[in-house]
Image 1 (cartoon, rainbow, N blue to C red):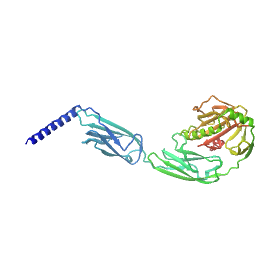
Image 2 (cartoon, rainbow, N blue to C red):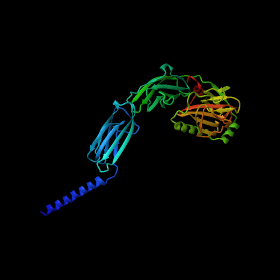
Image 3 (tube, one colour):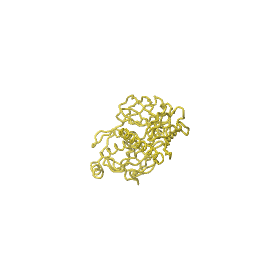
Image 4 (spheres, helix red, strand yellow):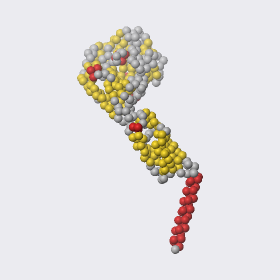
Length: 397
């Protein structure tokens, strides 16, 4: 009997304690509820129905609005951490940006409230794309650049071309343009043949699309040239300048670090008013010091110490003197496209990291480095592969 009374007394104390705690929590709890939503992220893209779930650490009422229209009104949450699943039907709403609002009000006297907002984008448009030019147009000479263009029906998340065992990034021709483009460098040594290229596209909701085409690398009859530079000049340049290997290492790093942004617009221009091309791109040279090698640039001349200017907009990434290239300037145009200018007599008032516009001076025409006379070595590289720079100045490129 005594045990029964003790048990009843304990239960009574527990009941009174529970009522007291409940009463205290009801009237004096002012803590804001925790609210968690899963299945939808801020500013993410979605298609089809979006499966979501919301939960709170308190009991109360849950309401959800889509673009101001109620999806759920005053749903009673009767236990803590109870999950409430719901779906956002994107197929019944327009493509574009939408707003989801979740509001939870707890069951206390103060009606503590917590709100969450999510903006998201709907894209239920099937991904479509097509090449701008016909298959017969995809012919490119050794040492030149294959300019590939295709049109898409919407902005894509990823676009790349797989060709010649390499991947090349694609990007809009200009801001908000439906035309995407890619510049594929063809080295001088590339074997003339027909090759397959594959365009891989992914939109912002994860849909994939592949385009295939073929292009032909055509043989070019490169010229030959013999060059001789005095040993005294070579020794002087080695004494005054950095080793050429350090420039090559730097150029490889710059190609990898190039901005994923097109810094230029339109065609390139020549860096000087060219009076003569003394060595064409791809000329096979023979020298006593270097042996037989391919000159993967243009040598152009004008009056000694005449101004040399930037061929397009970009950023100055190299301003230094090297044993072979002499006074050297390199401009990064974005997406791995670099312009190189060797043998300058002097530098203009420029510095590394500076933005530079097409036509701005970068120095004067000289004969520093491995040079027999006043000229400009003008070179372009894409992903550190040299290509003919004169092609980039053509209106039909």
